[in-house]
Length: 138
Image (cartoon, rainbow, N blue to C red):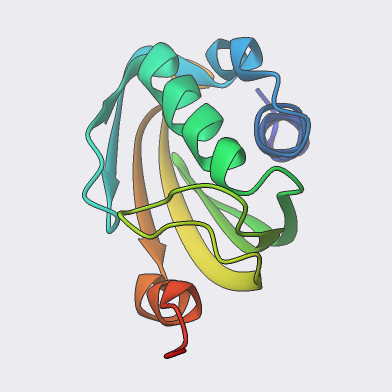
């Protein structure tokens, strides 16, 4: 794959899987043995488990939308930086729905192998996300 094709595949992945919720499309970008190393302490191996995680996230934030800020390539690595926005309408990470709009930023580095992501390292601003989910004292 050319660099432009890899960038396009990454953008399609986030648009289709995350923004549209078409989790079956995860296998177009993720290798069958894909492993996610993430700061959310969620075990994800393979496109199916990845899709389950996306479905759970979108259930908590039904109007979820991610904006890709950067998609950069360096050898077999694809670096994606994004901003997520959504309204907290369902349980997430042990927090009941608050109805609050939340925004969080993240960077994920994918290791590509044979045209698909074999591993991903996600660094997300989970502290800021958690602080937005904490219910205000009533």
